[in-house]
Length: 255
Image (tube, rainbow, N blue to C red; front, side, top):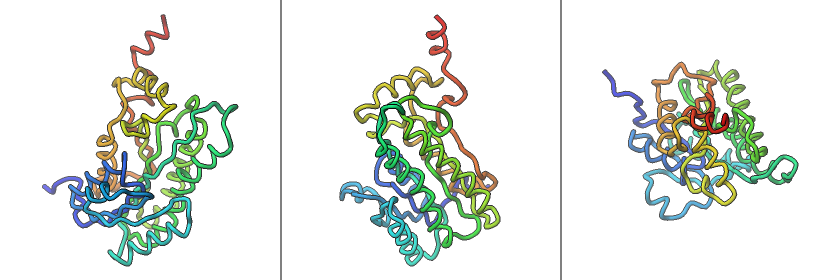
């Protein structure tokens, strides 16, 4: 029996792969012997030294930058087998009435438009059997108080995912999204997000937020040929959050 989730010599681009969820994905896929291209902004020497991968500076809000990223990868390796869109922005903890246009612009340009443009520029270099994985969010599957701008952009990512899955199916390129709750990374613990974390720790049935390695595990599956008939899906890594609130939270509210 073949070892599951094989990625040996697969050429994989991780956009936003030097920190947080992307860093966990990179380390896991390196262990699976993939050939990694890490793309992002402002990677430090310390971060790069931890990764046996090609680093390419890229800005997901810049159409030309993404085009160059894909072309350079193709020139180096001859193909792109997997594209992982992991660059993300969480700009603004405010109600819709209090939010500013800049919050929507920032979240949308990175999370939604960056995902769409990366797909556009990668697909011409992707052979049959390739996989595209978009890191979305549980905030893209429901409303989230104080995170309207983020939720809007992540709902857009799911729409892009499903549309791309339909349009690229004939090319045998699969497109899926991963939807975690808050993930235990520095971004989740940034100022302003404390109420969200406290809420999730109470409301999530498993009683905690996600670990980046848990998101990476699902991405690994979707990148492998073991998921060859999984397409157009939004897979929750949310401890049951999308199923409903925990029994403890329910009982507290019911009192």
